[in-house]
Image (cartoon, rainbow, N blue to C red; front, side):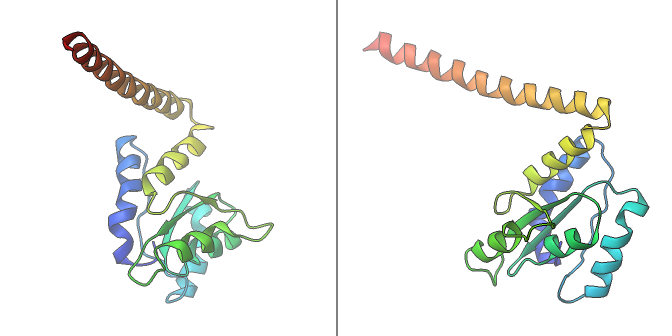
Length: 163
């Protein structure tokens, strides 16, 4: 993340990775205030065993794109609505509008949970146990919605028959 003020949002990605038992690094790397650190981090991440990078940033949000320009790893950008942003649009567009040759997957504004889930899906390509856990997660999402459907339908039938 670009600064500690991004932690409340980025924690959502950490929570998802924790839930699935996937190890990760969580740190602050500012594209503007610590450019050498950003360069070293992005250049060496794959050598440390990292397979996907989730980079969250607010304001001008250059961190995800700059990391993607240096690292051979897939980068998922999380635009963050920050105190100095234009309702998050500047962050979103800074991450979304990357030039050809420097792809960054972009999730919704403050969408770190989805960034974590996308990272899990990318990692599951080479890890069948992780893929099986992700399939179970998707099934639980389905079951959760179906419980809501049943609740709604049973409530509707009660109202209809009572009228």
